[in-house]
Length: 569
Ligand SMILES: C[S@@+](CC[C@H](N)C(=O)[O-])C[C@H]1O[C@@H](n2cnc3c(N)ncnc32)[C@H](O)[C@@H]1O
Image (cartoon, helix red, strand yellow):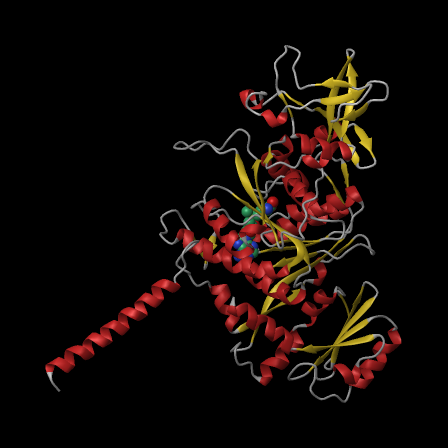
C-alpha cells in the first residue's frame, strides 16, 4: 500500500473522529444545571433490593376511631419515596419539605459521611441527593398538587435551577421569603440573614390553584366589609402614591372624568344629566391619575367593584379591595419566628431541648393553608421533628378538615422515635406541661412503619423465588396502598387487612387450591374488597375471580414494574 493511501485513510478516520466529537458536543446540555453525579448507596441498594414497609404495631396511636390514618415512616426517604411510588402515585396533594441546607457543618451526611465545607464535591453530592428524591416525589403529586421546599442561601441557586428542570419553570408558583430569624444570624463576613426561602411549584400550572386565604389575623380584621363575593375593604381610586410617575402629565391614560349622581350614588364614565364630574385631583390641587385605565375602571364598575362615598360634601371614588389579593411573597409576621414557634414550642411539647432547627408551626401551617384543601394528603419526607404533621392536625381542627399526613424521616440521633413520634403522640392525645397545665389533644391517629429491604438479587431479572419472597413481604405496603391498615389474619396461604369499611387480601401461592375458600370468606364480609392474587405476569386472574364486591389485582409484577421504572429515573 502506498504512503498516499495510508495518509488518506488516516485522514478519513480523523474526520470520523471529529464528526463524532462534534455530535457529542451538540448533544450536550446547553443551559441549566450540570454537576458530577455522585452515586448514593441507598439508591444503588435498590438495584438488588425492593423497599417495603413493616409496621411497628406497638407504636400505633388511636385517639379517634373515625379520623383519617396518618403515617410515620422511619427510614431513608429514598426508600420511603420508592414505596410511596407504589402506594401513592398521583395521590399526594401537597409536599412540604425542609431538606438539610448543606451548610458545611454537621447538618447532613452523604453515604454515611458528613459533608463539610472542604468537600470539593459538596454541591454535587447535595444536588444528586435532592434530585434523586425530587424525581420520585414528582410522581406522587396529584395533577392539582403543590410542592413547597424550604431552603436558605447555601443551595438556593442550585435548587431553583434543579426545580425548574424537574417541575418546569412554568410551574414555579412563587418564591417566598420567610423572615424566620428577625434578629439575624451572626455571620462576621456577610450580611446577616434574617430570612429563608420557600420555593412553591405546582405539578401543573393550569390545575394547581393557590388559595387566597388571608394569612394573618390583623390583615383579616382590616377586611371588615362584606358582600356576596366575600370580604373587602375600600381603597381610594385616586392614585396618591407612585411619585411623579402617576402625575397626569406622565400618565395621560390614567386621567379621565368619572361622573357621579349624588342623589343615588350612581357612577358612570359618560357625562349624563344630573351627574357631576370627578377628576383625580388631590386636596392641594395636584393633578394625578386614577389607579387604572378607563377600560379597567369600566370593567370594575360593571362588576360592582367601584363605590362612591361622600366625604365632607365631596364624592370620593373607592375600589373594593378584596382579601384574596393579599398573598404576598414576603412573610414577615412574628408568628414565623422559628426560635419562638419552632424550637421553644417543641421544647414545651416534649419538655426537653430536643431538636435544633424545627420550623415555625405557623410557617408550615400557612404554606399548607394556601396549597391544600380539607381532604388533602400532605407529605413531608424530611419530617425532622414532625412540624408538618402538627400543622395538618391544627388545620383540621381549625376548619373541620380531614387532611391526612405522611411523614418520613431517618432515625438519626433517634429523632424519629424520640422526637417525631413523641411530638405527634402528645399533639394527638394531649399532655400535661411542665407547669402542670393540661394541654388538650387535637385528636387523630397514627400508624408507625419502618422501611425494610427485600433482597431480590437483580431487579432487571427477578427470579421466581424472589417473586414469591416479595409477595410474602408486601402485605403492609399493600395495606397502606389500600388504606386498610388493620391486619386481621395471616397464614401460609393468605393475609387479610381491614379498615375504613373496606377489606384487602393477598393470596400468596401459585397453587390455587385454597383460593376459592378465601374468596368465600371475603364474600361473607359483604364490603368492598381488593384481592391481590400471586401470579407470574399481569391480568391473569382478573376475569376469572372478580365479583360484585371483589376487585382483583396482580402481585408482584406491578410492584416490580414500579421499581424498575424508578431505577430508570
Ligand atoms: C432540616 S430537618 C427538618 C426539620 C423539620 N422541618 C422540622 O420542622 O422539624 C431535616 C430532617 O431530615 C432528616 N433527613 C436527612 N436526610 C434524610 C434522609 N435521607 N432520609 C430521611 N430523613 C432524612 C434529618 O434527620 C432531619 O431530621
